[in-house]
Image 1 (cartoon, helix red, strand yellow):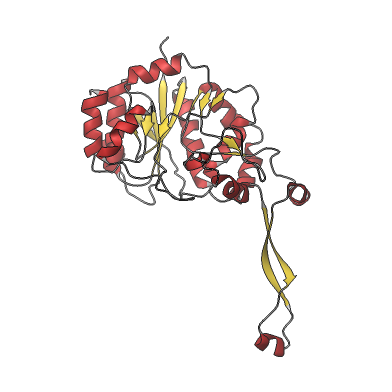
Image 2 (tube, rainbow, N blue to C red; image 1 turned 90 degrees about the vertical axis):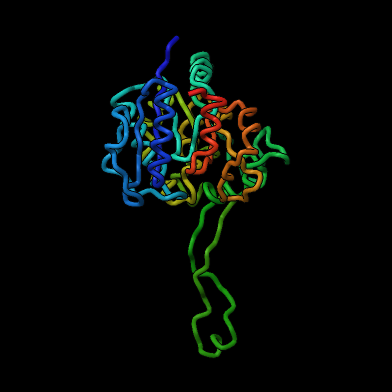
Length: 313
């Protein structure tokens, strides 16, 4: 079975690195459909330097990490890709990603896949770890990420007047002894009373993923997407929860937690980024079985090694 794989790429800097990525994808997959959402407000880019199979999203969204604009940019890229190509599989990449398996191996695995999406995910629970989490996990599977994610995506924050002791000088001045304080409510019972638009179940994990046409159609056409966007617009780092909450709430979608993306979070704290790869990382990248990896430096030295030793292009 021959399948078509399309690519949605988010970028905001390093046009030369983006061209390198597109050139590699073209060499591997024979000029596949590629749609790039580039943040032109952060970095100029000459579209004429890119091959004709690459389309750019216009108008672009002024994206920033940890903000609703990032998943909205991905949705726009998916929408353009679906409109002009309708590939069988959609792959979301960043400009610092790079393929680390041969095209024939990637296509064969997706052709025979029993899954609709490869998306790192777990349910965000109150004072509980999802099944399968261990103390040795890193990244989004790290147990300490769960309470952080709960505060980001589930808890309710309010600014409200509360009784708060003031300094002795303020007391002598006769100022009103109430101050506005930031209160965080975590109890699910209280949250249900305070926030009626909260999804019944919330999921989170890594942002970068790949999915077949059925899952992307569900993501783009889901009736609850506008209300979920409004909900996550008020949340920190919504790109690590919005898509997960939509897709994982569909009982007929089969979703693998293996995102087929290798990232190294062993040296990163909560809220940090995965490490930049060095040559010493190549053996574990290749042993992971991932289709793509991130983050690669713009100098292209490690990508050269992968081209010759792995991709053979």
